[in-house]
Image 1: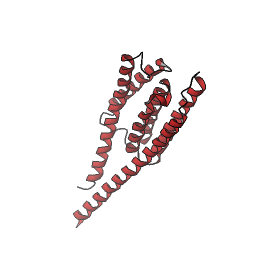
Image 2: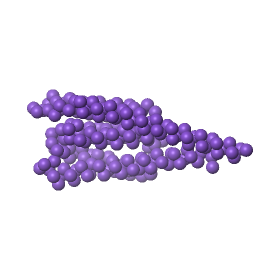
Image 3: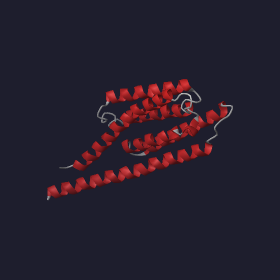
Length: 198
């Protein structure tokens, strides 16, 4: 009975890891199919169609490799460095998709929120805030690069700033929530073990 709630909590996190990895494979494939089926009037890949296709393909392959290496989602949860590296790769892949589609104006910036929310559940502590910072910097950099390189730049700096704030807020909120759940699980286990000792 002891540590039953903690095990349950860990099991729920590994479920999040499995679901997120399915999302990691399905998302680029859906984007790719949408791009191919509506290539004429789609905003996807507007700035750099080749980069968009390459990013979608690479991201889907990356998801399949991760799923193959850790089918139950627990393998990388125990290793913070590998888990952090895979999440940074996600952020970079989504940044390329955002950049190649014309920046935050494409609406793809919202995909970052899912990655940051998932990372805040899977990684506890400061690393998830660090990942939110990387995501915010990546979208700001891509927007800045677009503004400097395009003849008619989208200039969505205010929206980019808001998205950066949302990423940090999401990370901090979910960290607080998962900490509470973890502490509640610890307390329940302690109470259960005290009852058994009595």
